[in-house]
Length: 418
Image (cartoon, rainbow, N blue to C red; front, side, top):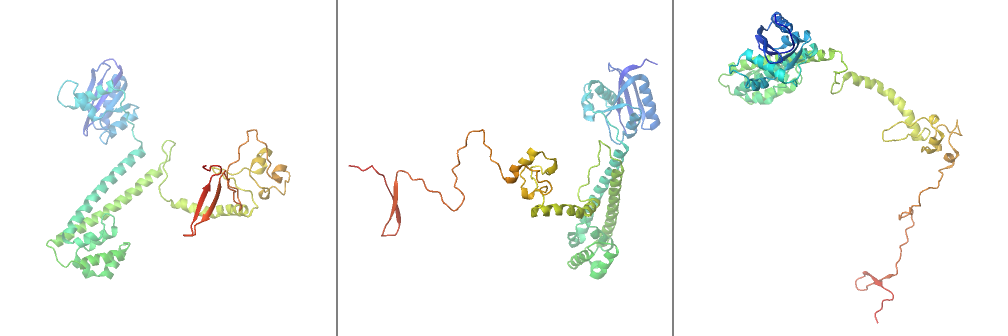
């Protein structure tokens, strides 16, 4: 047996039935290359053979999907580092190497060479049990939703061929009641023969919501068509079968939704992966808020009413709505600055000397060290109007007797012309 190499790169060409593993050294020479069946025992033997020939191994795979699930799980169990080499990168790198035949051994060697030359490839993290279960459930649900869409389109196509009025009456992609109707009644003759009352009772027995509206719409569509289309009986049987399958798929999707929710919320939340809050109203939280609401109102109303009546302390409104500190905790300088009126201070009766004398008698004017600011030219408040400033001009008016209009004449003094 040859001596172990200090560092090796193992490229794995992932396949559905088997994998091909190639180990190279620092010079790019192939140390070991073999095929391993996609089975636990065969993969463990291959991993042991690779680890026996290198002290440290960097693994690389070109597929991280379902086919490599068992392989990645076994490598993670043995504490091996795995990197992802995209298939497009493998195809581009293969051009630079000798040979034109595309074989599994050559692809595995190219993957190993890519690992050796590039150290910026992304590491593959083996998913936890919770992530794997959720991925499987969501993938299965996606397949069922796709099947449901195709079956709805097929049902509408067949139904519009012999009973277009009924096909236009309902949204079969979202109406469970319409699908329930089609499981028992598919032709206009059968709907007319049954009648509105019996059809409504039949729908109510099968727990269909809005049975009255569905029965009335179906009867209107049946009365609008009196002609029997050739092949109607065969088409009606196909519609009934498709409606039954759609109802079954809808039930399976609902069960999968419940299972996904229970699986997701049943896992304990960690610090890194927190369970996000569910959007929309939560019945439990809403009930909790309703139960606490009267208590909060009982706590708010006395303080609010006392402030409006002038008996309680005034609330300080700031940009961040911070509550005002208690008066007993304020310093004397701060109490003189806060805009609290004596009539609204709650400590006036018990501690009359709490506020300084200036705060009780009124605002105190203090001289400013800055220069005097000229008064603003504003109109004073009150009924008295401001007197106009007259210039060195005399203004008077005279009335024209002809038309009653007033004309303003301006005469400048000392400007007579000779």
